[in-house]
Image (tube, one colour):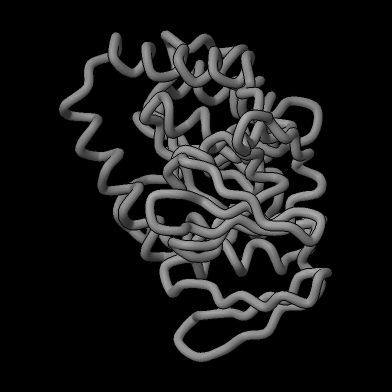
Length: 248
């Protein structure tokens, strides 16, 4: 097992979660990681994405996707990277890493070590790198059909979107517009750096959020610039906590 992270506290945290289950080596940067992967051939690597000079993706490219061991990537907030991991079925951990989430990813990786051959691992890595090289393009405006004409609404003007029976209702510039599209479809077309789903029925423009309050059972209330207040769902607690962090 190889743990790669340029932050000492992050390395110690990951090593502590591993406990005494396996022998652990460490690398403090990308170049050190490349050398240890080539020389020591670990079965599994916990690889930080955001590192100076050579990041986690640089490590994969330097070693070669076809020669990489099984990898669990660790990332702070790279939304494009998370999408690439999901597309390629490569495991990842989102910082700050919880013990429960770590255990799930670690057990999944151990099962894959026995089930997936080197060809499959290489295919997953190549899929990830390809997805990163061609990041998804998101909508910049909505075309809303109203009667015999089409209204174009800039996403910068959209405050929030709510599910409304078989439609969604788009709140923008003090007006509400209906679109006949599922909530999940419009969510996937929006840039997650600009919009966040905080409830099964609510998507908000992150730039429109002015205040946030914590309420019971991991739920939150957000107030938008317009004064509208919306409550988050319980299952969106992690997303809400991420919105309230400073990403230094």
